[in-house]
Amino acid sequence: MRNLASPRARARAGDPMRDHDALPPALRQWAAQAALPWSARSLRRAWTRALARTGCPDAALHRLAAAETATLARETARVWGPGYPRAD
Image (cartoon, rainbow, N blue to C red; front, side, top):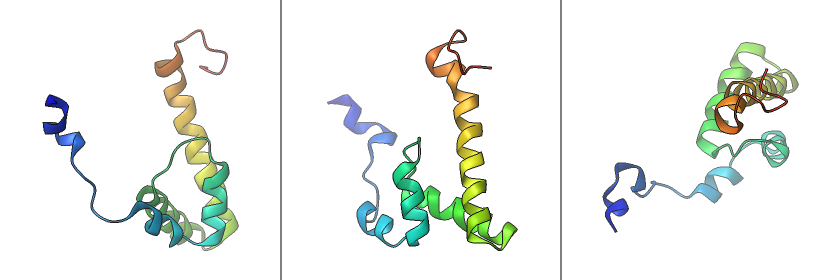
């Protein structure tokens, strides 16, 4: 039961499903096929930033896809080891 005292075990404020449902439809659709388990909060933050920089929803989605690809490339070797085929 010691893990319940961990700072990472604290309860999150809000309703994650309601937060997800409040995302724009195009962003929800993108998240449904995403390779990483994005939270609604991080998706909203990345979407807002990408949309502000591009001014175009399609370009913003491409930026999110690029960010996800970069994250996967960066973490592949650490998660699966340097011998994993996509670890380059």
